Image 1 (cartoon, rainbow, N blue to C red):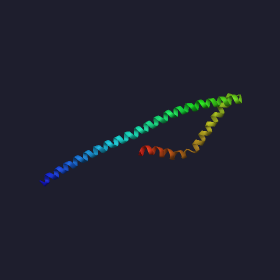
Image 2: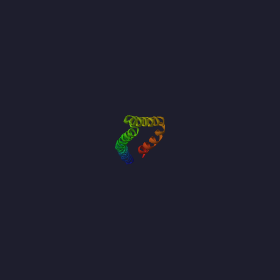
Image 3: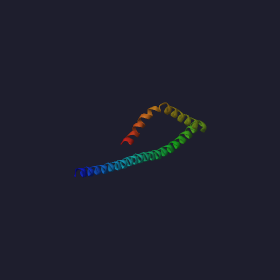
Image 4: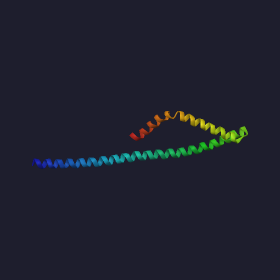
Length: 114
């Protein structure tokens, strides 16, 4: 009798362990899907907003270059000054690129560990 009860208990424990392992695997698959989808939607949003912002910046840059060119009576100089301005902005971002790492890492870790 006691041996039969032990066998039944071991059988139940084996079934519970298998169920736990299956559920744990499914949980991690779902968690991975959630993180992946959140990353993809964030990337898609950034891509759309970035594209619109880049297009607006391009139009404003052309307008500024033509405006400066009309003011200086030389369109080439207008585009040159706008190009130099963006070159200066690029150099400044390059020099301070390390300051961007911490906020970006913090933001993406919030998505990953949420």
